Length: 241
Image (cartoon, rainbow, N blue to C red; front, side, top):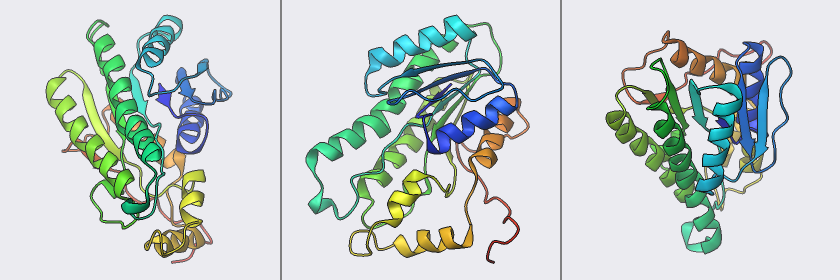
């Protein structure tokens, strides 16, 4: 199960999971395309709508069976720039999606997991290095991801029968990264770092991130902490050093 699966990291992870034959429940505000190679159920869902998330979770479980891996991936980047210039509605939306959406998905999964036949079940809430780094111009995004980290640590304590991790995927070259690179230093002073990574090809692919999540599911990857950062993917041939 992946939220925010219509593009970017979510769509890339879905494609990788399909290559491994996993059954997929995929949702986003725009209904995701089902990747070839496996059974999928897709739907347009706004993760800020708790009732809609609940309905989708029930349908996925009815159609595909109990969920073994639930990935709360849906998130928004804006507003960016100094907090004094933020639009209040954009701030509210970011809080609702980046924190509220994660809480809605987590609740829908953990409620159901208690009723399913015992087995290894994994909750992944997608976080970011911005949760612990000071990026001027990224106050709301960084704060929401820090909230995701701490929220997941508490859920892990409350749900000892589940494997729970807040996973920072590293820098993944998605539409969100392209959006970051459009900003000027006046609104996001660290933009040069992200532009340099793009020029060097120094990013993690969605498949690389997905493989680490599959390791969590299989139990072959067992981080000692709830908050886990995916390591940098080895550079591809032709990338700059």
